[in-house]
Amino acid sequence: MIRLKEVSLRLGNAGRSSSVLFHLPSFEVEAGEAVALTGPSGCGKSTLLNLIAGLRRADQGQVEVAGSDLEKLNSAQLDRHRGMHCGMVFQTFHLLAPFTALENVVIGLRFGARTRSKLQEKATEVLDRVGLGNRIHARPHRLSVGERQRVAIARALVGDASILLADEPTGSLDPETGQEVFHLLREVAEEERRTLILVTHDPALATRMPRHFDCSGLVRSASTAARKENSPR
Image (cartoon, rainbow, N blue to C red; front, side, top):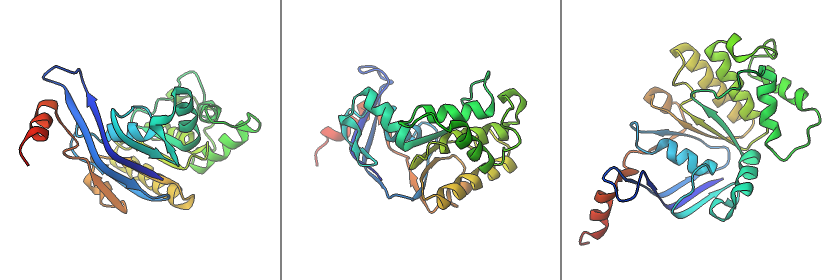
């Protein structure tokens, strides 16, 4: 389902001392697999997620997702691919304040290559699936933090994306609500055979995933990388 090989990406401004290099020799995930991305802040977890989603392009290497080489797609094709295959959940929800929970979830369908028929019916089904069947007409400011995250999860699920990309989805939640959201993501991914990639700082959550990938060392200063590349072998 996901394969990255010899991927490199320069972060920051070239030529400055703060410039850093992201380099990943190999990363593969099978369809239906659940993987936690772990490591300290700034180690490259979110960068890896963004590469998989096509939100960042690699400078070198190969990024294959759901059978497509992302480096060969133009911007419009990337948008279409992401809408079809990647459901994204963020720590800060990214809900649109003027719209209800239902309308926020319907938006997740409009970006895919699907007809607009029965959009509300589909969105209502998914909101019910995440436990918000009685809150579909509530706007974000009327929802608890945990409920907002459930709306964000529903938006990621509604398009039937084969891959769920969750970037610290429990980071802004209290421990109890965080556990509920974690269980919900795992449950849905397992029942519907979706691939789940979960970024987390919480080692307790990572150990409860079938597999975890340590991102420590993926990002280093460009000068250090150059010295290592030019050092005698």
